[in-house]
Amino acid sequence: MTMVNKASVGSAITRVTGNRRHARVWWLVQGLVRRPSLGMLVILCLLIVVFSIMKPSAFLGSYNLRSIALSASVIGVMAIGQTFVLATGGIDLSLGSVLVFGTVVSAKVMGGMGGITAGWGAVLVGTVVCIVASAAWGLVSGLLVAVLRVPPLIATLGTLGMALGAAQIISAGLDIRTVPLVMSQQIGYENVAGIPLLVVIAVVVAAICGLVLWQTGYGVHTKAIGSNPEGAVRAGLSVRRHLISIYVLSGALAGIAGVMSLAEFSTTTIGGHTSDNLTTIAGAVLGGTSLFGGIATMFGTMVGILVPVTLASGFVIVGVQPFWQTFAVGAVLVGAVYVDQLRRGSQNRL
Image (cartoon, rainbow, N blue to C red; front, side, top):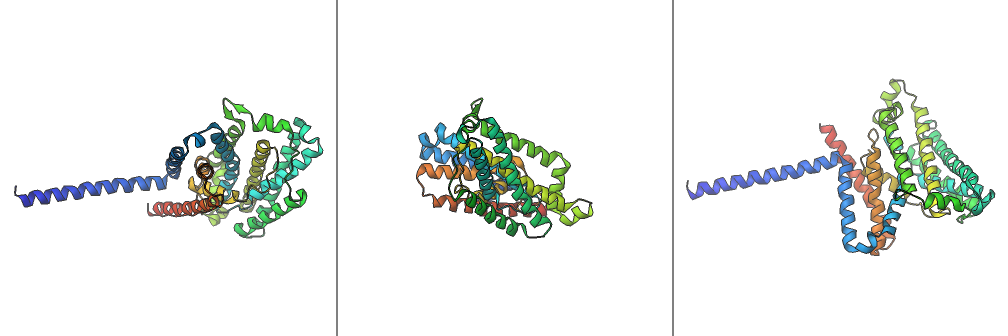
């Protein structure tokens, strides 16, 4: 074999090897796009590694890890409701304000029943009030979307302002600290096998809602409405009634998250939920729920919500200024929507 032939063969082998390498990389990228929950696990692990290298003692400390878990639990429960709404092709921007309203009304009621010295009776009543009050705002959003045909973006933007304004009127713009001590001591600070009780609650809620989404007719109808609303109507589904129930469910889950927040902080947090709507949308879409309806995954949502929460915590640990956190959440949301479009495009080509 001549030197020219050897060179040609070597060049061909290099090209084939390079093409195979590129094919494997492209196959991996496509796999992560089609299974976004796995991709989010990879990104989450990378974030943990980066922040652990930068500030190992602070980021990996038990206090910070517990804070991340608790924050993800509260926001994650709201994101579960957002997942149901997104599955129908809608969107709920009011979740943070609905949570605030529920906690304010609940704290007022518990304050009237004895305040910080009240017992489990007041906690039970406050819990029911928080969930019902939050679900009522979900009912308002559902009626606006399903009956009055107001676009979900506008309808929930309106209830966002109304719920937050009503909460500020009731509380005079000040946080209410009349939460019974037993609530924080026995719920907020309690552990189950070393795991915070609030995390256990969030996992149980996610598991139940995941089963509802995938194993019941209610979940099938939810995704059917998001995939093809006209087809759902022709199939005999009561789309209006179902949409109303979805927004009520979303509001009720925001109420559960509100109860968890009261137990964690022993006070209302009126100014602490301004970006929750963006965070819940980003977490759900990052985890694999489509922003355009019809596709939803509860496991992906719980994984996806850990990404912005971990990012925010890491920024605080490394000393990044707070407004960069909001910027990062917005960037993550844009990236999540782009990945969703790539996923839909790849599925349409199949």
